[in-house]
Amino acid sequence: MHVGRESFVVEVSALKSEFDYAIDRVIELLKDPNYTDEALEHIKNQKIGWLTHKKSDFNYIAGTSLRATLFKGSALARPYDGTIESIKDISLTDIKSFISSHIGYNNLIAVVGGDITENKLDEYLKKIIPIFPKVDKKEIKIIKASNKKESVEIYEDTQQAYIFFGSPFDYSYANPDQYLAKIAEYMLGGAGFGSRLMEEIRVKRGLTYGVYSSLRRTKSVSYLSGYMQTKLSTQEEAKELIQSVVDEFIKDGITQEELDDTKKFLLGSEPLRTETLSQRLGRAYNDYYYGRPLGFSKNQLSKIENVSLEEINKFIKSHTELSDITFSVVTAEKK
Image (tube, rainbow, N blue to C red; front, side):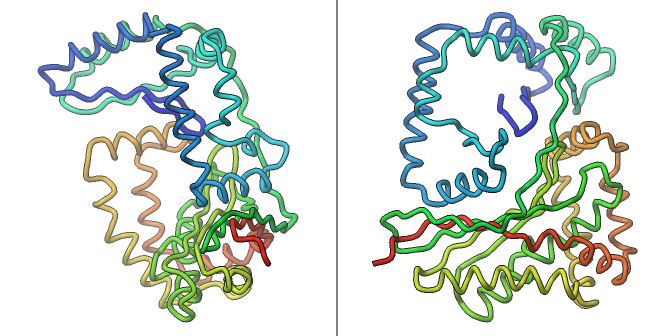
């Protein structure tokens, strides 16, 4: 089991000969969760220990601070993993109430694959679905990233500057031209040594070992997110470079050579993204969750193959909001 940003996931994987047994154990767990004080205290202690360790994780601190600034006043501004105080305050009643009001048969999505028949699948689902209650469906609220271009510094005993940055991306997960966002994401900061950020900040100036960014797109939020580390003496230069690279990217777009290289990589690496059954099931889930037809990714690949330079640059130049960058930096206090 694991929790995503917008989902609670139960995964079962087993040999075909053991799958009946695995399903029976899942059903047993769902019917009778381990709701005991001892179990809760054990989990809370684990979580508190993890959060205590994160107090010295400067990437975690910078990232948490960025979200707090970028999404001020919203649920995303709170730490994903809670705080030590909030973990201590959780009771068994809180856990039971949350699960019974959020996880129901009427918002359940089942994705199944492997050596299994439809009849057997129906048999399993008819056992599992009635375990869940009916819950009130909750609308996912759209959260906007700040365009205020703020800069926050957190002072720690560090020899490096940890720079996290983000900006709005006015783009919906429901848009059919996701392939354009994928190309733009790859070229700006997702391509490693082929990206603009890496080329300008590491290759040309040697200010970091690596700088990366992505265009996050979910039902609740769409925004640019990125990070890097650099020397304390070059943190301001690095921030200015991030800003200028994004500004020039929006102003000028990409070249035909960059587009050709991006096409080669995205098309050539596709088999690596569908190697395992788990990867293929994950894609099927995403297609359904985001209201896309099954096989949406394959359709997008054909569009990547045929996209023109004019089309991708029109898309990039239309998203001037990406230049409204907010920075969060963990650094040493200036003497």
